[in-house]
Length: 159
Image (tube, rainbow, N blue to C red; front, side, top):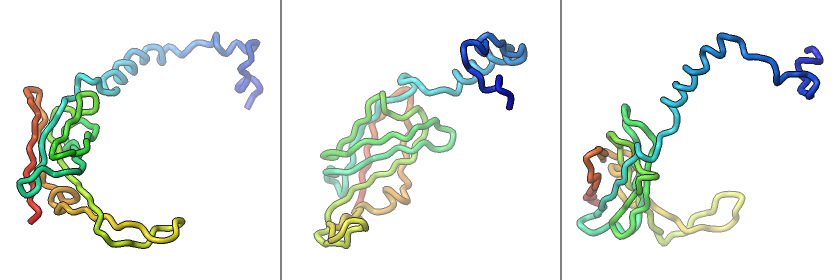
């Protein structure tokens, strides 16, 4: 490499060099593409809320996640479930479209298990107690619309 290729001193005049004409013609196109594919604004998202029951009773604690299906813009949205209710505000809510929904809930089993290295000793065992059909193999769906109110009710069964 020449000495001038890496010379950024004020004497090198690197900041006075011009972009090639082709690059200048493509600059407006590049800016438009970035704007079109850039980050979504809060106005593209929707507030959602709902309830989750297990065997007719409110699910005391859990987590709900909304995963965009093909053709629906991301990102994934999620919230804790407390006393059978969840809410995701517009700032963190999902976009319009169809979503695959997963609901999880864990609890202590009362058993001890060996703690993973580097921790020595035992740890409390935790289990996912909702059936897989609501989480790892979920068939739950939600359609987030512009008309709203985007309130979803999920009635789960432990059987």
